[in-house]
Amino acid sequence: MGPFLMVLGVFAGQGLVITGMVCTVVLVPLGFVVGLTVAAERRHNRRLDAFGVPATAEIIELTEWDTGDDGGAVVVLRVSGLGFRTFEATWKRSEHPALCVGLRLDAVVDPSGNLFRVVL
Image (tube, rainbow, N blue to C red; front, side):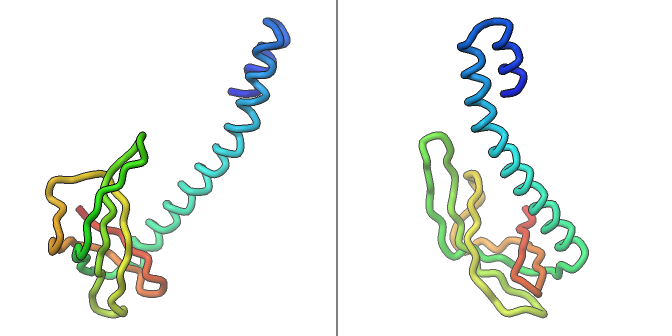
């Protein structure tokens, strides 16, 4: 969008040129970061699909978080199962009325690195 506004600014005036430059400087790096995050998430999910073992994730702590624009729950899980050591992990997610301390959820774990996915 930034480069488009820069070209448009040449024809419409200097205000759009500056806007296009600012958009380019801010949004292009942001796009790269989002792309890298999505690629890592896909890689993790493919690894869990290929090597994951069934597990249980028990909620041991539940707190709310709110950043003003976004909010949800910080869920502390104790993840256990066969073939790996029990570990604790933090999971940030949107609020859900069924979430409560003591709730056991199905999960999938890659035992080689404590990579996990909760199955709701």
